[in-house]
Image (cartoon, rainbow, N blue to C red):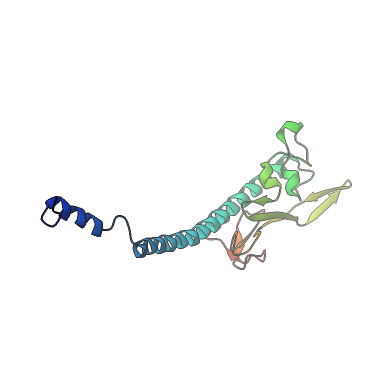
Length: 178
């Protein structure tokens, strides 16, 4: 068989010169595009996580204020609770008490929720019959890691008005626009 004039031999020669698959340059370009898109996605995930944590902190502050109001109504001799533990408690452990009122879920009563740390500070008190009655409180929520888990610290009191500290601390001077 003479391969110079045969159609079969010409097609076989053409198949040997064409490449199958991608070149190294094409693969490198695709990998670079994927890397750039991944970096953009990772950066925006951090922003959305901080926003979600911040929104959760504001909602948690509102829940704590509601729990404080219910606590003061349930235990008028005590007034407001001075600890988150007093607002929390296990519902399966028996009847609510001033030390464990079972008004907050356990994750919030622990003082840590979604990248924020929560604390309560009691204000003025009146002592009658050797029992302290607290008439005011301040609840603070600050990021566990400023810039990573959140950017702002939040505060509220018995009025329920939420203020924030843009530096991430608990020096809350600016009112949150709701």
